[in-house]
Image (cartoon, rainbow, N blue to C red; front, side):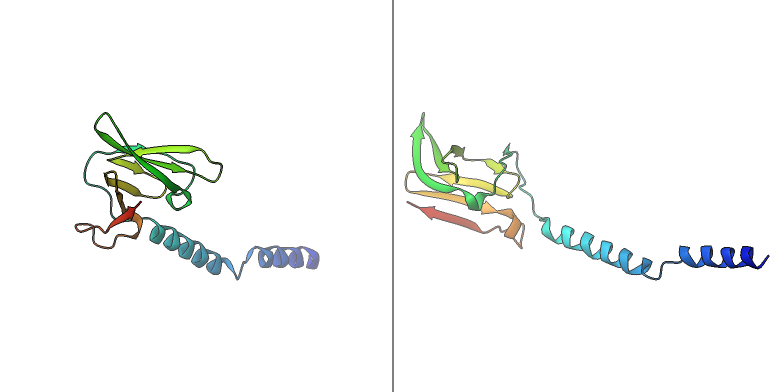
Length: 127
């Protein structure tokens, strides 16, 4: 009988996890970090969504061209692959919207770092 009581006592003791609450708190803090990484601002018009496997910061602007009265920006990545972007393209991974392109400059909105959605910061790159 004593063996059964001892077995019952030990089995109940093993199921108690004193660190259970800490793991819940850690999971909640990870969820909060993931939510802060997401941008609350989104473009308010229809855009051509482009899914590039790399971020916009890893692209290098190499040229601006005009083809059929449309301006296009030429970028290369680390593997020297050519990427062509035009006005109203939206890079979903980096949350970057191409705002305007002409032969001298390239303007874009970085929605990930925009704090005021109604007045986004337009970043300009000149050649």
